[in-house]
Amino acid sequence: MNTKNLVILALLAGIGVVLHTVTPNFFGIKPDMMLAMMFLGIILVPEIKSVLLLAIVTGVLSALTTGFPGGQIPNIIDKPITALVFFGLFLALKKYRNSIVSVGVLSALGTLVSGSVFLASAYFIAGLPKTFAVLFAAGVLPAIALNTVIMVILYPIAQSIFKRTKLTSASVIQK
Image (cartoon, rainbow, N blue to C red; front, side, top):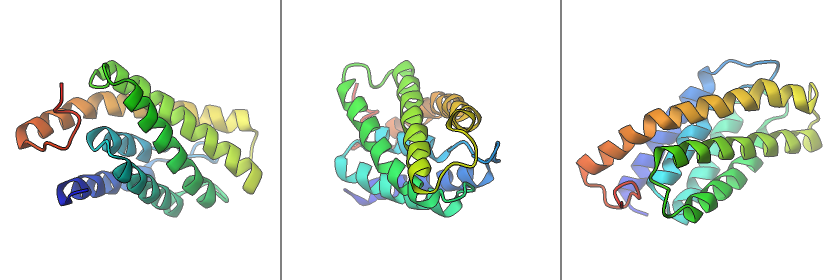
């Protein structure tokens, strides 16, 4: 793990925490926009140490900025699980992982996993203020749509920046 990768991951985590903070609550749950930055970090620096570090940092930052009652521990639980599932799917799609379509589908699946794990762990740890279905529809489904759109927009930009700056550790350069 080199300094350039750490700086990239820190910038993405910082952008993610701002997005997570300014996103409004819907029926007691806010769509997690920090996930898009975590997914972008995993795609740009696909190393297991970086993925785990980013997942832990993202989980802690999400826990600090959550508006969900009792959502601190579920945020810390859901981010590492989501990051590892996303990373595994990303590695499994070796041939197609640089495609904008696969990046969009991966971020949609990752957000689905994250929302499901978050709500399930919140249910068992603190209870849910509304039904699972209402919270899923109000928070997870909009987050899936927003994260997919964000990734489809940001991925080509990040890919272009990485090509121009010759950062060789990123998978986006390898075609």
